[in-house]
Length: 389
Image 1 (cartoon, rainbow, N blue to C red):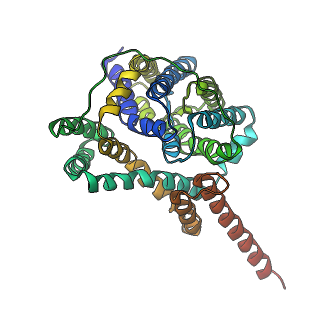
Image 2 (tube, helix red, strand yellow):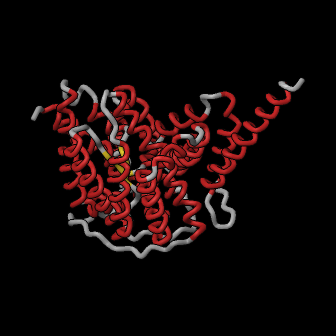
Image 3 (cartoon, rainbow, N blue to C red):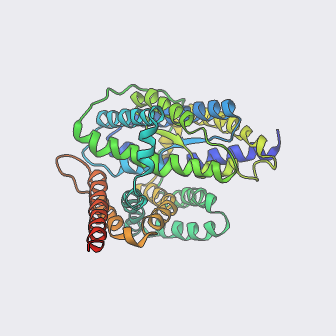
């Protein structure tokens, strides 16, 4: 095996795990997960990624890499008043809908027809709160946060993918120098803990459905695009079936939805991994093996994050999502005709509005679709009126 193949697989695993672990921890805290449940969440996610990446890359001989849903984790972290049992119920619904999409092509076509402005506006509304959180933290701990923002801005000029890793490294050193790190846990192996699901209709509508849409629109569809851009066929139904089944199996352990990767997939599917496109699939087993190791020690890694100051965790999470926010805003506002619908979707989602116990992401989606539908109907009516004698 070429060194570049092993290096690409390991770098993709490191970027995917360390770059967004803070968001997973924030999501677990938002739903009241205990430290044991949080470590189970992380371990289960790592095992799901290892299993799905290993199987799909070996089965299709393609560089198919999976990941956890970072926008989905952000959606969970932005939720309020939801317990871990209710979150698991929403995870099960999202997984079932992914399986339905794999089984019924018409459902996949329906998701693909979701207006980009609305889907991207909803995602931007979810992410903007995290990026704002960076500068809210700067107000309470400027001596910690502002140097990390500067580190991020400089590091991304050299390596956008490695900028968050640089922030983590500098942040750990700075927090230690300032005496802001609590007692570190002793090394220990992870365990999986079952969580009884609670099927709350309001949470299913306000979290489960938006989680499915965000996962499809912001993870799976871009992941398909990465494969196509690198000249590979896309076994879409196989990918959706495997990731959906893995999500269904792991959800009872408090585990978020897993899906096709986009950013880490670009690392594994690009020419830097191997000059021969037919050999790049070997990055998949390397990444899978790395995630098995991360699963084993997920409890210790979660304990490390628990010992860090909350401002550091919020800063890492917000900076990790800044690029995704920029991309979502660009997509949401790209078409002038749909900008009002995109802005309304974004603002309703970001507002935290909760009606009938249903979260703001659902209402933002509904508001955007209502605007798109009404404007389309008005244009059609004007067109018919103009054509009358």
